[in-house]
Length: 148
Image 1 (spheres, rainbow, N blue to C red):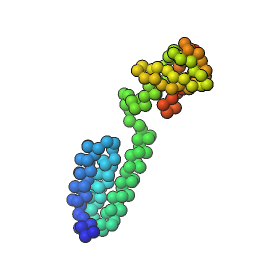
Image 2: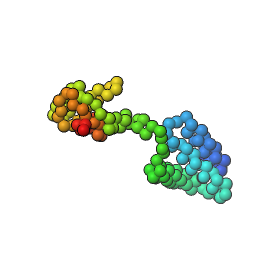
Image 3: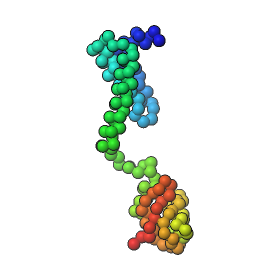
Image 4: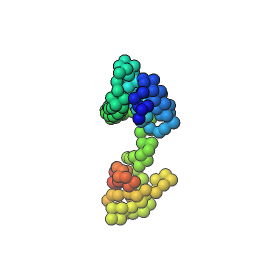
């Protein structure tokens, strides 16, 4: 615990750089914000060198939480635009597509072959050969209606 009382601004700046370097090798964007908080604490300590180690740790914790909450709120208001919005949501890629049933839908459940995979479907009972349209996705089940 004695080394905590000897924390200096450059310790925080080194921690900030290390966290940002680790961010490069880790998935997501979490360590970046912790690194930013460590850098702010280092700059504050440079300006006010008499801050106790308890206050430094508390500032780091508070700034980390505040930065993460602020970034999440910002990204919810302004989501990142992508050219493949359904990349990790495979079922949503099939919305509004029309298929012909190979097997009937019985008791509201059935199966359909889509490209190279078989999907469970839920919808009104229909005989084989009926044209259906994918209207929604519920987990790994495609929701269908008869196509017009």
